[in-house]
Image (cartoon, rainbow, N blue to C red; front, side, top):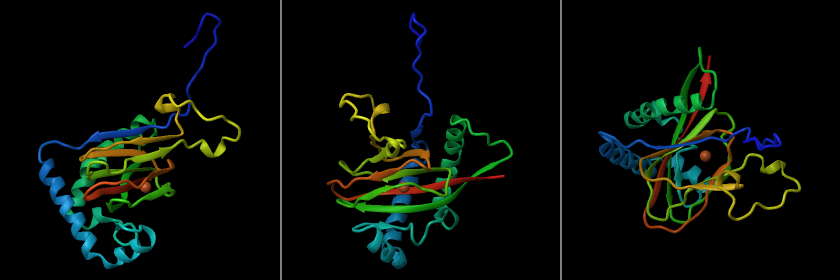
Length: 212
Ligand code: FE
């Protein structure tokens, strides 16, 4: 916005986050079946349980054992089909040139978190677009918390005011409801802080990559 002196303040280099619900015809049954399959995996995947004991204390993730579920399960393939369009739209919104390139899911895994389980800050370094679909979110279950990608470069900045708009805060929590999908660029550092709730927080995370 320019004032009478011609001064201009611009916002550049945006960090986009996409969130929407996948609810629609057929969704309740789809989500219920997906939740059942996630819980079935959690009890029938010894390799994943061993991996989780070391890397996901108190919870279960198939990240270390079954990380391409969209290729082995009809339900997860169905989730991929529901997501493809939105990932494409998001890449378009980010102004990436995908003409002559394909965008495809490369990894897809389950996370089952009882209360108190945390997933510390990380990125998905070998991918382009990543995200999570929320299968079960008990009341009080932890939101996805994302971090300003420039934080590691800030050397002498004072803290931001408590009333700063979300777009200016260093960490932002993104509450999600059952049926929501959240997409972000894979370099965005994110975490799930521990919290107290009843039951299990169940999500499916995934990566997309592009190829020529
Ligand atoms: Fe992640």
